[in-house]
Image (cartoon, rainbow, N blue to C red; front, side, top):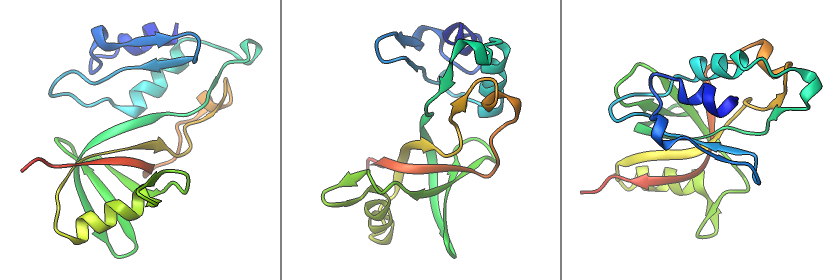
Length: 154
């Protein structure tokens, strides 16, 4: 049901939606030139009507966001390309790249003047058992706990 609800999104490439029953994982991507709206994704999951009696839960939501990373005072922001949306980027202490956190490596790349293509990580607050998780949208601004990033190709 959740896989079908995700595939019905206008911004999701229906041919790219994959369900791995062993892992309990749904993988999908946006259509070319489109953005996956997290508010609509939450609404689609809610529309499946999965209730508390099913024992269903959202364990996590991992995303790869494309855009420009900017450091403003004490916040690191990823401005999503093609929209006014943004994510606040934070450290995931378990995500290491060459002995340091992915977040620290991302900061070092920016300080060297490198441009980033995308950031991958877990969206904070997107977890919980149904229906409690589905009663309200997780708070904004959305936070990505940085697991990895990709540098722009020159």
